[in-house]
Length: 361
Image 1: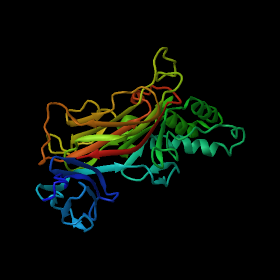
Image 2: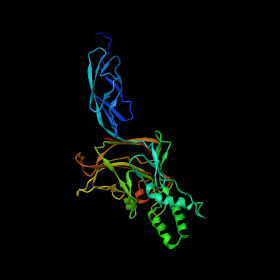
Image 3: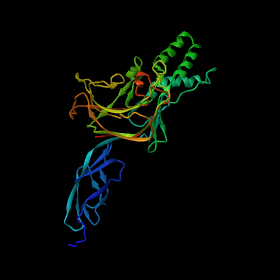
Image 4: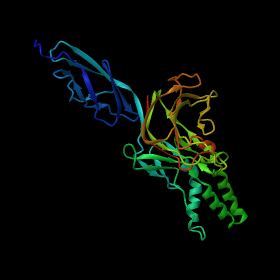
């Protein structure tokens, strides 16, 4: 053996060259990777960096099927050291990059691709009436506020979601002014809309749906949080930046001196069936208090962030519960520009931007 040959036999870097793979972790002699939730094809030709002069079997430029563990053998340049690396899937990632948006068929607001709903759906009736009023004599000067949730081209990578807290008091004043021009029978509908319309509306985006029928009695019941989810989530990560609005208001439109608005970004795993065997869907009423919540991951630093800020948070146990693979679960993801928005409190102009969110299991 030549004395100047290396005895190092390491895999230093392992790259899948695929957007389907999120993270790759090399630890000791194991390599674990996280695949996106909708990954079907596990055949990849990875790029592998090994110790100088060493050899690897199977060859690095040969496609492998990683749906089951693959073992790579690295032999040092001098032939003395032989290391075996096992490459296997650690879990799956639900990835939300907000690159694709579509128009709502009824009201025309933007909606990110995926199982998302937002406060836009609750505000849609108000905005559509305001749009119609612009063609009525004496109302052409009304100002229609921005949608609470919309896309931005200035994301961390590509597009991002923008969540903004909106002051609807000028819009409510325009509706009251319009009501005065109507007969008493026609004015009933405007009264109904005004009853649903808070002074402050936080920009909120969540996994789930919005049920207008349920919202008629109580708007918070309209937010139906959660989608069916298989597996135990272990971490929640992504990017955000936040600017709070100038003045904080209570639900009656009064300024609350000394209070600064704060955002909320969190994810929950909760039991999808109750003790009676019926389906469970958490709403704006019980999303933070329900006994069915099993795991939670939340961004706790809620201070203003002018630049894109990364977070990575482990899921923590709630209600002294343990994850059980035999049970059925739902995953809820909630992001809002005003964390007290469910109480109709917040600062108009508060803006939360989010991008590249990941749930890893």
